[in-house]
Image 1 (tube, rainbow, N blue to C red):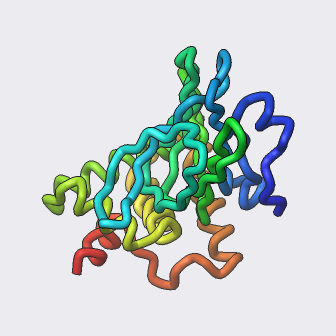
Image 2 (cartoon, rainbow, N blue to C red):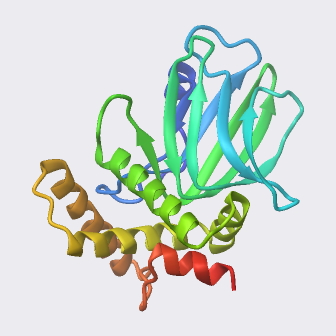
Length: 224
């Protein structure tokens, strides 16, 4: 799998996605964004995302083109928003990963990588990726309330678990919900088929746990 972004797409759009893990994957393996010191038109000027800092605090960061500043950070689950001066936005959803920066003359290249799918969310459209992100956020909100966790406690436990464990636990939770509810809607049927395909792919690659945990169990275990 080629892990290099397309130079042409980076120059045209200011960002590019890395290949999917397999043809039916709901998302991408990573994302590269070029932020220029003087962005024009719809060129990206800022990335908004949630970072887990070295002091174990989680903050919402706004990244810009900072010359001579190179860093590497853990990214928490949630949205990654790329914004331009003309308020054009491109939004992704991640289950966790890492981001690094590389300073170049007049611009900074940010490279985000994850071992699980990075979902692209489309405005005013309801796609399988959008549905997966929405259902993941509902699960997290419900578990946070049920286990009486602060936001910081929740992020700490998700980071401690790691992106793959979080993603597989989300899949397991949604597969169990699928067994309990039957929804005839076409999109939801496609969504449920995606869940099964993802489970099958992780089983074939030897990465599906012998005793899978749902998300509530995983988060609770990370607090022990």
